[in-house]
Picture (cartoon, helix red, strand yellow):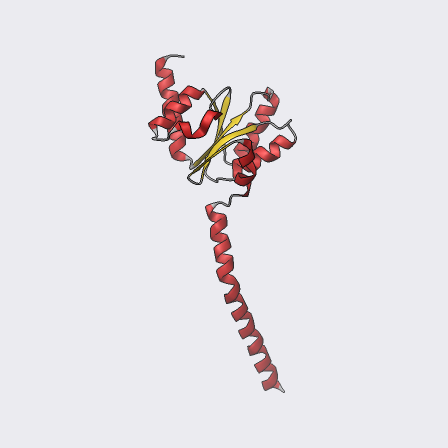
Length: 168
């Protein structure tokens, strides 16, 4: 690969790192072309960008972005694919669901999600359980809304009883 092409690819990776809040490092070596195409389709449906990269170029892109690639441990070895996403748990859910039917592939290596680094397959369940910012906001709104709804319901019942009493 020419040096100019490598530079363009690194710039493209830096742009992806800037446009997406989270990334996952996965191993897709054992997937055949049909299964890889199916994985790409699932990624597209879930607003996840899947890109197979050379480890050295991804490390350079991370460094250019100011990220210490050493935090990812030895996950940047062998063939690597990067899943870029704006929702932290979507790639984890996709990996878990897709792997059930495809001989445990893709294999999770590492992730940068919600400003934390997760290394190792044992962290996949933790990432699946992560709630997105929107999910957390919805939980807070539901918690705040519940007491208000109880008060409104009580007032409506009281009003109905007062109307019934007035009608008698």
